[in-house]
Image 1 (spheres, rainbow, N blue to C red):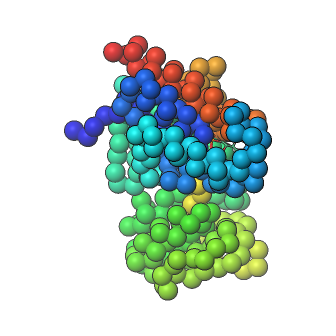
Image 2 (cartoon, rainbow, N blue to C red):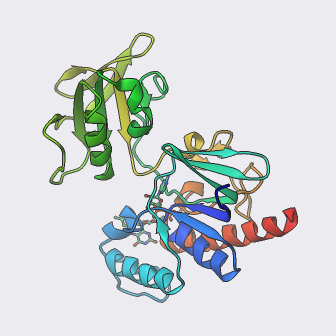
Length: 286
Ligand SMILES: Cc1cc2nc3c(=O)[nH]c(=O)nc-3n(C[C@H](O)[C@H](O)[C@H](O)COP(=O)(O)OP(=O)(O)OC[C@H]3O[C@@H](n4cnc5c(N)ncnc54)[C@H](O)[C@@H]3O)c2cc1C
């Protein structure tokens, strides 16, 4: 059997890192999912003056401090994007494409996605719209696929899916040098609406319209309601009590994903509460 962790933490921003540090101090067997850059929002901050103990620091410098801290504690980041989490009763299964991890408790620290869904996105979800192109790639063999990529990670998925699809359009939602294979056609346009009858047929762009069988929207984070089926959401945020417990036993949440104000130190504080609540929960189920 695969190793079953005590606590799986999803997200490597300040909330997830603080949860990891505190769970590790309490001697729990943890796994932390995210990326080596920790958080896009952390790297982007020009100047941070409200993180106690670090006056006049850039987001990038704060990121380096956080990295040094977790390195010294022997905490590693597993660079995987969790696509779905299923509550199995007394444990959780976390899906990464075809791979699965198991943990007794989970802490959601996925941040907050600010972009609204596209028109038609929710309507066609599962009918041609998806959030993991590599997972669904076999369904699109010899078909036309469009990937709307919000981060560079999406380029890898585009290159892989282009091997199976008859045509792959890539719509970058950021400006950078794209590392895409020749087969991929880059469209520098703004997606407006997904249309079709029973399933996806077209993507309307600001200055064009393309025929497509599938549209994958690859953002930094998946909406929590899609990530964890059955999770209670209120006003676009995960509903938690003061112990950072969600409506699902053993599932805790912290940081921007549970509500405003969107701030580093608030996220770190909540990550700590979530970790300690998870530790208490683990002792209660023994
Ligand atoms: C330009 C800018 C400047 C800012 N300046 C300040 C400031 O000066 N002071 C301040 O207090 N706050 C500031 N903020 C706000 C601050 O960035 C956020 O409040 C904070 O980063 C939230 O932390 P978090 O841990 O909740 O989420 P995030 O920092 O958003 O981290 C979430 C992480 O989880 C990862 N993730 C998401 N879903 C998954 C998944 N399914 N699988 C694996 N990983 C996943 C993401 O990739 C991301 O790395 C600023 C924000 C911006 C954009």
